[in-house]
Image (tube, rainbow, N blue to C red; front, top):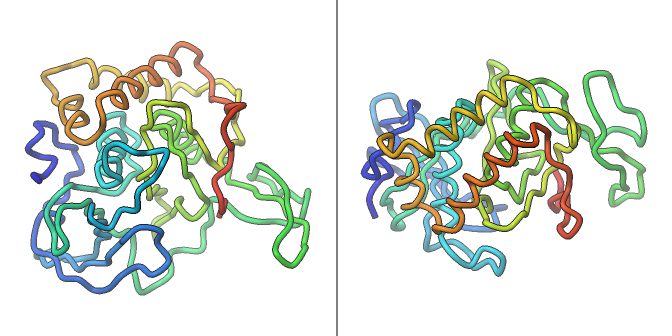
Length: 275
């Protein structure tokens, strides 16, 4: 399997170290599919998460394509539209065969900055700068409300999730690095051709899209329609054809309605576990 660069479209944030030699550090034990922490042996070093295709568990609702391909596609779409929130990700051969390799945000052996995007608060006690998604109980029976930040970068992330039809936007998939920059990870169950949006970030459901996100959607649609830029060809190499067609349809629909989507009536609105 070749790298995504051979598809003719290169994202502006391509990370050359991801294409160099890898050293396996260990397995991420709590991952539902095989995920391996690797050290990047290129000069600038760092770490990455390597998800080999051979370690993907079959999913009844995503029977076609690969999770690794969807991970890479999310990065390409994020870059093409100008969101820049999915860490650099490539499709390449590795120690366990072909898979996605994504730059690890921060130091894997140190905690990230304590700047949460999603949190739990006592039921109904929503702090300023946060919005409630839903309420429930902890295993111990404590009544809580799930809340998320209302910062503009989080709002923009919800538009990207609507574009890629993200079926698993958990709270732990939203990270801030030591500078406070927002990053979004784990997009293996995205891009399905049928509506499957599940997220804990419903705070803007039904509200008008802001100008910045409308501009990102226009930029992405231009990239999808401009055959000379290679984005559609690259996505066709990563995703089933129907999923690429549906992606373009979602972008057009968002631009037509100019509003954040609401939960679909026939599909669970929140992933489980949500955090």
